[in-house]
Structure formats: structure tokens, C-alpha cells
Length: 75
Image 1 (cartoon, helix red, strand yellow):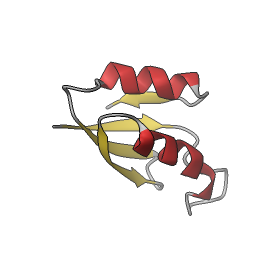
Image 2 (tube, rainbow, N blue to C red):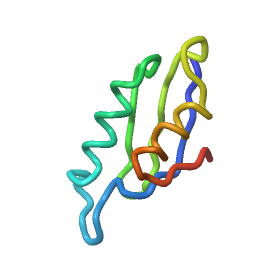
Image 3 (cartoon, rainbow, N blue to C red):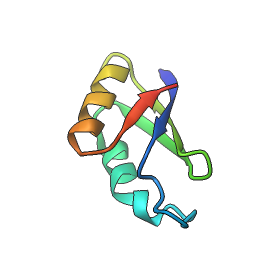
Image 4 (cartoon, rainbow, N blue to C red):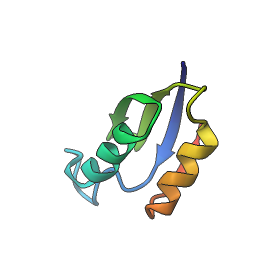
């Protein structure tokens, strides 16, 4: 298992900190094959993702999220 932290825009809307805006992408991340845990930090616009390196990679996760129209970078 690998655990990596990502900076991700779109987790909250301007003025919001509840994370309601980011729920669709967080649900999408949780449904990706190999991803076992997704822990967002709405104040920092980061998300910690735990995944099985034998099934997916950090590059795969970044590519799939970007295809959904979100900015994401490993930090």
C-alpha cells in the first residue's frame, strides 16, 4: 500500500469549508480500483489517498482526476 498527499483545487467553493462542493470528486476517488482510503483536508485543499500500488499508481490517479476537470498535484 502507498499513501500519498495531493493538492487539489475544487474541494470547496469560495467561502465554503464544509466540502459539499468536493463530494462528487471524493466519491469518484473512493470508487477507483485500488484506492482503499481517501481523507480530505478542506482547509488546506489537500487529499490523502491510500492505494494499492499493484493495481494503480499516483500517475494514474492524477490522470483520471484531471480528465474529470480537477487540478491535482502530488505534494
